[in-house]
Length: 412
Image (cartoon, rainbow, N blue to C red):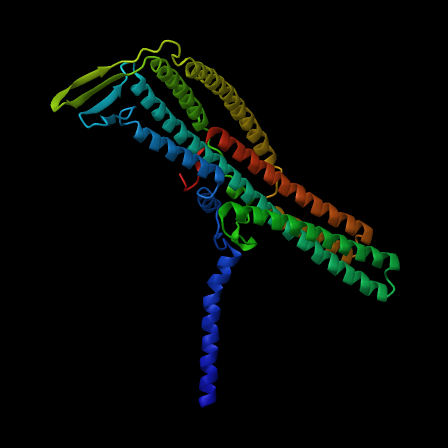
């Protein structure tokens, strides 16, 4: 009785385990687990680590510190004192240079424009890095797909070689067929190793971007998930255009500052003098009139910087317009070609390989045709994945050209 009860309890336990595993199996067969490293998560992880973003952040911090420094007077006050050797005379002077030509406000405007340019440059760096990371993610996903197809090719080649071996033993296949099957298996193995190499380098590149080890199981299976469809919105001024405009304003403010610096500042202050025990106290006013050097060199340099900044702004505007036009045309063409893709390229390739194998086993295909068809299927699947990569690259190009907020994902 005790043994029967124990067996019954075990049977109930097994049934409960089966019932618990059914929903899990359904989930695995259906939507599947979410990727542990989504494209948005990769962007969020890569932005704080990229040298381009780090450099832009450092420039912004430097600009902000310089702007805070210029909230005080442009020239520091000075305090000087003298005492005679015999101690009968002593003096104390306090002076504060003040520019009445507008040098101080111009310098503060230079600092403010520098901060604005640094903020815009940082935003542009974030968009550029996000596009780079997403394309790296796409390359890794494409490499995984190529590896899966190559693995299927190896499995098929092994089964064909075994089938040909059995037929050879039974006298139904020639020695040439056996050698051809073995060579096909070697070619499939070489293709797999090449795909593994591409996969390894792609995963390493992505790991370097995100600052953590990335395995094949961490990625999403769909490459286009890393490159969402761009929004069809009117273009606005990009952050790099804002940065160029701010740099031009900074150069113009620097020119005003250097022109104002041609006039020496006034010196306001106070003095105290002790001579033979008699004390003299009063205000002071000083002015310096330069005769030969009137800040000509810095003025000419500032004028040249204004010309350079204006040219850079105009060149960038033309480039941005061209980038947006060509990127839109590229996406339109890529999305049109996307209709030629099957719903699931990997499953389509597997089904075709199974059909080729079945045709050979049924005697409908000879071995040379089977090997040739296998190679054509693998090449076609590689071309299909390459087309996916180009579609993703076109989308990312347009998103970067228009600074689509979706490019940053959750790291906005």
